[in-house]
Image (cartoon, rainbow, N blue to C red):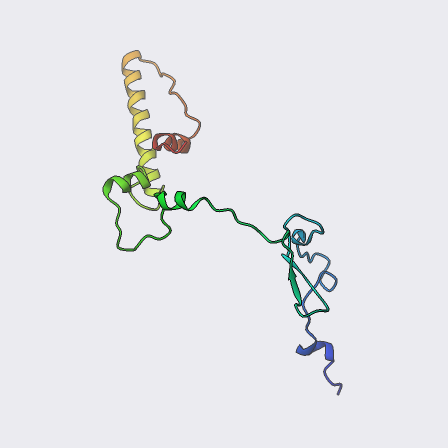
Amino acid sequence: MLPTAARLSKASRRPLTTKRGNKDYYKGTRQAFLPGGHRTGAPGKHVVRGKAKYRLLDEKVRVFVAPPIEAIETSPLKPYVHTSVHLSKSQESAAYGKFKTVGGLTPEHYFHLLRTNAANKHQLQKQTSLQGGQKAEIPQSPTMLNKAMETLGLR
């Protein structure tokens, strides 16, 4: 019997690279490693010799600009909201609009809009047939969903 080959053992498993992968193995565009790019990639260099093995380069360190502290303190937005805080009815209607549930446009809400729209069209058709005796053209909206979204103020 032949012993197990070393390449089949767990000891020889190395990270998969583009050279060792299949023909469609792709590791990305490597945009973070563009040479000379402005603030791209790592914010420093690895140094082979020396006491500090990694040196930060000031021109590569990412800088985040925040608004002035006065603007942050006077802002109505706060970072944390306690779980015991509840919205008033006016705040809730302002936040969720005409939706009754938090979930937004539910299937039941959409079905209700379609039924009311169909009933309105039927009433309009019935009135025109009683008045003129002939079928009148019903103004067509692009789609029922667009009409529903317009009535809710989402478009």
